Image (cartoon, rainbow, N blue to C red; front, side):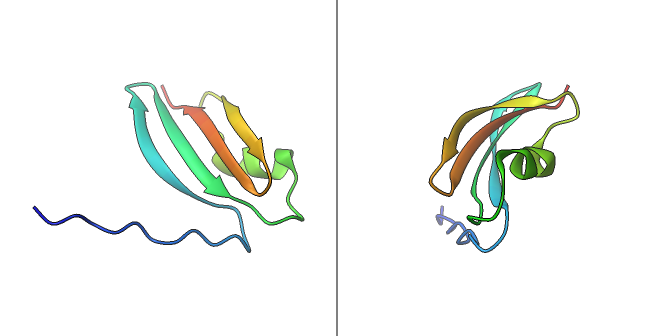
Length: 68
């Protein structure tokens, strides 16, 4: 089986990768530009039923989005 290479994240915008978490949530790990606020990032990645940051700072974030 060939490994697939993940695309590079673009730190000039709010950009992320989705990862499996549970049947009712998704992990969104990504980057954001210095001009973006925590609220800007959450607005972009929030799940249908909200979510929470596990990490936010230094241009990187990990967010658990509640989807169900």
